[in-house]
Length: 234
Image (cartoon, rainbow, N blue to C red; front, side, top):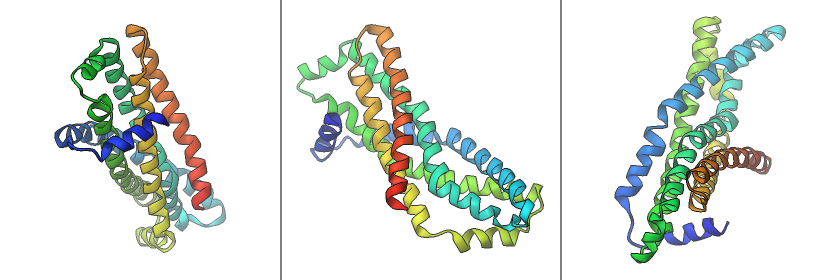
């Protein structure tokens, strides 16, 4: 929490490190895009397959599109994106900062009168905060399209009814709630991962421990906060 508050305080102090922020946005967003798309696509497909199998028992196959859309936008899109980015970028942030800590590069920043929170953590924090909601939007779209592919092209559901049922029951609060979760998940992911790397001790072994703790704690915290955010919104 102390690191989180300090990071927020340094965000609004000049200079703005635009080049470093863009570099981190590329790492967090662009390079994580294939993982997120594949995960969301196959999640939407298997969700449609399971929903169709269950709904067919009481003649409600046309509601598959609604279930896929609501599940992806409210829960699966932001949660799976947060977990995938946590596994990919959370570990990278912790390992990079941890290596800088044990090789005394962070101490060298202090001797150069450079605040390491401003120089190292703020760009990663802002990049994650910006890119995670964007990744969630793509995950929602790809997940819904994956559900459409299975429902219509494989299982033979009426394509018009699929999209009509989707739009009839999908509301703006469903979209906004997923994006709000993505913002919180981005803050959680960046703060925990940077903290674990920033407080690394014990050489190469310590870097390994910090990387593991960053991924595990970020994933668990995302799942825990997901419940409380959902309970507050709905």
